[in-house]
Amino acid sequence: MDMNIGERIKEMRKQRGLTQKEFCERINCKQTKLSYIERGTNEPGITVISEICKTFNISADWLLFGDKDEGTANKPPEKNFSKQQQEIINITDRLTEQQQSELLGVIKMYLSMNQN
Image (cartoon, rainbow, N blue to C red; front, side):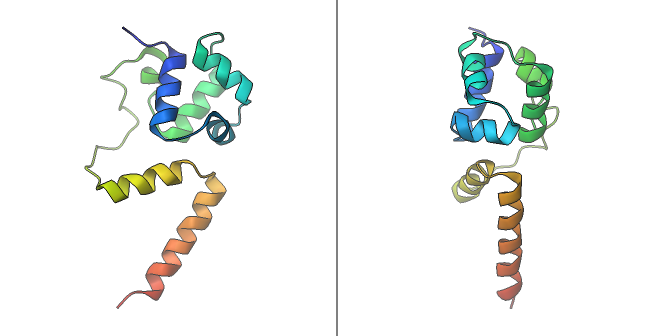
């Protein structure tokens, strides 16, 4: 069975471990609007689609049509991450851009202090 756009958005959000609230904070959307989209009651507008694609680096072709061949058009080549690396990615996906920037600063400081 083919998924509709709302189901693809919900699947993508859940794969990243984000609540509707966290997801909406990242794409600047109201939670009630996302709920309607995920249930198939409403369709997302171009602004929401654009924000999802930019924020989560996914293909609009996949989001709109579920096209598996084009679904990775905007993604870098896949890399096999360790379990810890994947956990770090999943955690940072939940952070706002500002929080990610602050965390990156902390990591860089940690690395500079622990160089041998």
